[in-house]
Length: 347
Image (cartoon, rainbow, N blue to C red; front, side):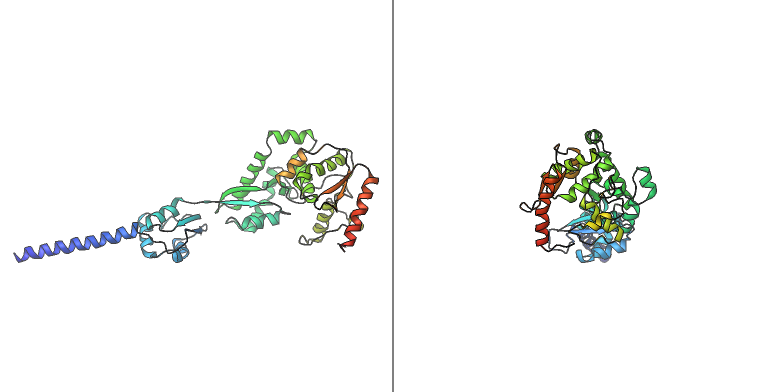
């Protein structure tokens, strides 16, 4: 009888222990384990991260790191940490946390425009994905890649069509570059290629001219008219005489791309550079700026008119006065020169 009581007691203690253990396991798996009050937190896991690295990143966000680690071990995640961008929601339990970190890699929206050089683009992209600017720039300038895709280092900026794209945060520099060449080829669809052929320009030349047009006017509705001026000059064998190309030439010669030049001087027009369209008749060897889609399409659909000249309109800032003759242009120009002198702008 005494032994029977002992066995019953042992059984009861076993059931209690089992209950406690089951309760602990249940809580470890299914109870909320987030320690933040906001709706969600974003976690970035770098390529090559260990489970310990992950633990260090998650520690401020979780109530109980050990219970999370236990579940991660049981589900095989601790030995298979996956890089990427993950969204943790308030109230998630360990099971949900592990599932999210195992398969919930969320894309990021990558946006870029208005970049002057590949160096600027690399810096802009590195702020948005894991790849650093050095790796990105090296991939952009890779000679084998450029040769394969019929680009040069000077016109390669034109390969990157400014827009909003989705990438996984842990995208490598090479993966980003390969995606961009596909987007470039998609952009140059049959319709755009046909228009480029009709106006006598290659896609590279369209983008280069578009970069000049965009530098000349920030007004999207004026770009087809400005493009028409340059196409009139180009088709008639004139030099483009575009001030923005001279400014770019100055920056390239000095190596100082941070300098701000508001006024082109007569002495600048003599600068010997393939970008100086006052000195050389042909288009520059590449874009002087990253043109947006509206500028590219403005060139492809340029306004057919008789204008050969334009100058800033001091009575309608942002826009320009257009002229068909040099005499008319000189009158417009005198008004602009008087205004710019009055402002004290010397450079």
